[in-house]
Image (tube, rainbow, N blue to C red):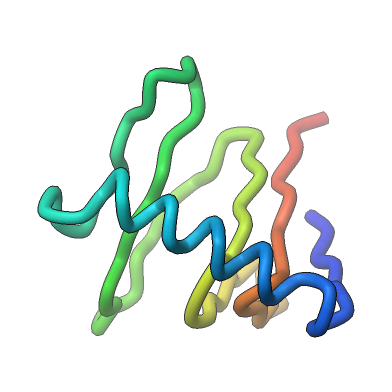
Amino acid sequence: MAIERMKRGTAINPCQELATLMIRHTNGRGNSIHATAIDQLELMRESTALTTLRAVYEPTLCIILQGRKETLLGKEIYHYGAAQYIVVTVA
């Protein structure tokens, strides 16, 4: 698992543009994972997460457009937010 930090000034505007596109494709469909016309590309929208969501991820690229996320791997906690991403791979 790798977490990278981008320079905020160079990443925020593209993230805002992506967030606008995501809203266009998920608005009115509620919080959830939404399929797209592209095979294996899904959009996940969560307005609030009041409880811990538990999941085992398959190989994934997750780009955070807004808000923040916390991931627990074993006993390590990873925090990331807008303009950051996480890559989950399988050996």
